[in-house]
Length: 564
Image 1 (tube, rainbow, N blue to C red):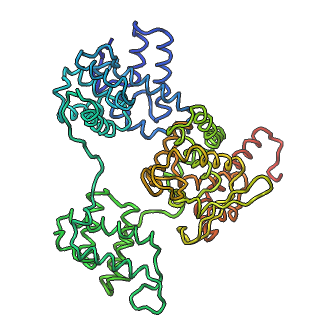
Image 2 (spheres, rainbow, N blue to C red):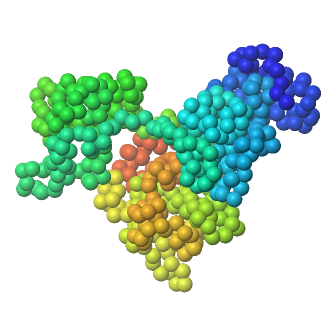
Image 3 (cartoon, rainbow, N blue to C red):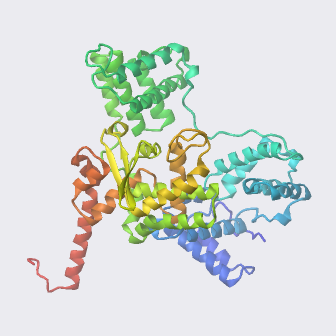
């Protein structure tokens, strides 16, 4: 049953919860011990003390930022802690308890019954919505947009869902799908929200002349003709120009958001006019980003290139554009604080082992479950992980790996060596990449190709190692998200594909301090100075650790002389 709070739920603290649990006569002794242990452990994980307010919104934000690997908490233990926390919040602070199917009205019980022979996604995705409606006496035929608005409010303030907006959006989608999937579905369609902040207008919304000018810019900046008059001195790669195009779209859109008439954006010269340049900077700085960000500096830098090399701005105006751009610079060279925080858990050998070995568990589970789309995705994720460990390339190169263009085999007796070879013109810094995969990864590679990749191939065979849903290769965002989620699920570590490059350098320099040249070659940096700029601090950390060990040794052995 729900207990009554001795204090307002606005002032209830974790310490109060400990007392409430201890004095709760309806809970068994072991259950009390488990819950109290979870409550005490929570501040250690998220930071703070037992005086933290027991609030769903507060703890949702803390949980999002929790680094469980850094404090040695397993994903299973973390799941139990969150479950216990949700239980006590509802028991002592919220108006609802964990919903049970037997509590459903006849109306909603019929709805849940429809899901028994359907795909599990309907039951899983709509269960919380159905129980919310049931608890608030909302019938299935009465569900509308207002119902789902109230459901979002409930998710935000009365649950510990990591992403309440995502849960809400998915529930809306599934609700509408049910109207098409089930003949007797009683509900009406609802609006599906979009929580993605949108700044950019579509290309069709801009004047034709603006689109034409960007095409001319791409031709001008991408043409390599030493004798030509209509080309830039140093041609840009196609990928760079594609990035410039997106930046121009966002820059022009910022002007429009700031009140500039979209019909008057007739060419790139409009964007780099000094007053318009300032307007776009102010909009991003004040309205969109809330301060200086690396992305704003990068966009401003591109617009200065447009002004100087394409439009032909010069004199005082060009100098002022450069001055504004330089004032936006905020990113320090080298390792970012975010990546530094994500690498810190790897100081623990236990986390290193979990990270390096979790793919073995994925492979065993996939094989045990037989040939299915789900198993194929598990094998694919394991292969992505293993490739990035042994060949720490950039994500843009990983997703575009092609079996005919990048995979090379060399016979070695009965076996064969397998190499990943990426030409210099496909690499960000124009350095050729060549990696040899170890035998264990080659076996996984061949298993994936022979049994599991065919299950993921939806369209024509185009040779992509990681095929997309219909055609082409898998999207970078999809691959990144799948990898991040699977690593966190099995290890508790928060990583992204690019972090694998930092992890590779970290692992190697821990074993071989000072050997930056090997790391340079591994990561294909053009200069060792670039490598040292990013990773010299790893040596500094090792040096400080050695110093601490030296001091401790002197404390333990006072006979050591300082001259020794």
